[in-house]
Image (cartoon, rainbow, N blue to C red; front, side, top):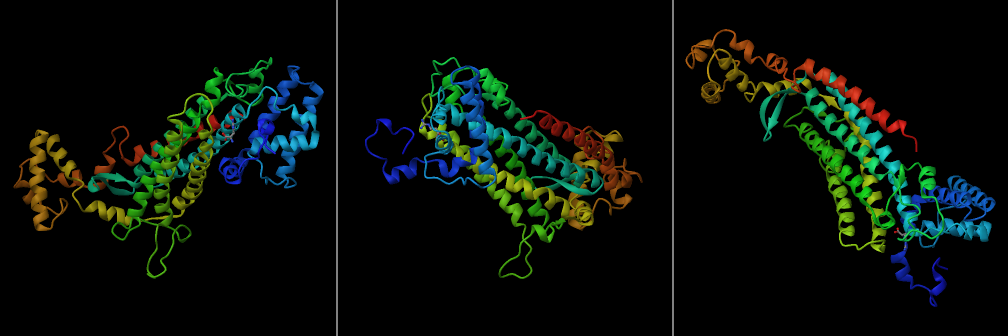
Length: 467
Ligand code: ARG
């Protein structure tokens, strides 16, 4: 029997029912649904809309239903339409008429909007915490490998010296922004649609401020039409998740390259690698590849909801039931990836010696060589041209800037002296890149320490605000 069966003579067609039902997936919001109902009935009792004693009875029974589900006495199995119907039906089965009063001054439209917000709120906090754990792991690598010289790249061509620590700190910065975006999303999300009714509020003298307060929302949303039809918060959450995944995907891409025989900068531990069914020698970075691949899936989830929402007239439309599976999938996917990354990173072998060797080839100190001449008074553009010629000569003769003799240097400019070798020494080139945000090891260590502070502040910012 449907909640809405009053005006109908025939039962819904089986296939239509299967298409219509959301219980198979919205049962994940069971806790949020019960929480919302407890707040609603508490307010109904306090405002005298239903008998206060009966309201207490309903709230107590709702808590019992929650316990029964938590302890497995009441399985979340039913052929009812959705989680809201399931809870109300169970309540009514237990309490009769008292249960039938719960839905006074409420609609499933404001109810579902409330449930999803509550669900997102919990998930945003969890995902942010996991993001900050990964961020912390990157900052630690940043500190520990501040002096591990490696080539920095542009166009994937060796460019200038950086360190592996500098690299790790770059990713930590990205993830810290992701956590900040999640927090921002949480702030805008935290208003209560409950009491918006189906779309046009209610004639009962409800107290929406009270339900907002009971549910830990900052305020009730200001417009009942907007209250039931807004899914911006889910879109913002999925946008933040998409950007987060884009960062993880870029890191994955680098790790896949670094783990290749062509680079050999890292070796993933066996626990985070897989083999081939045919090639006995293979050790594949599947988890990095999957994380890169799953990024597309999260973007897809975001686009699902953006597309669902784009043509909807106000207020609630059943299309919006499509928000949940996309949202759940995006969150599950991101959580799956975030569960793996910190340990995958902290257990990988980092091969400083191979990074250093790669840094030694490819003339990544050519800019420093030009800067040497500039510091001796030559205009940069002239120095740039001379060093270009030197590099061309080296390439022809199989030499490096380090292996050029002073006589060979002098043939290009009399400004070259013995001190050129110090100027192009890679360790010096790195140590001298002390400009703010640059890769000098002492800079990077200071940045890693600063990151640790900012991570701790972000953790505290999420932690202090209770549900
Ligand atoms: N299952 C629905 C959803 O997820 C709940 C709201 C139903 N409202 C309605 N008027 N049929 O959107």
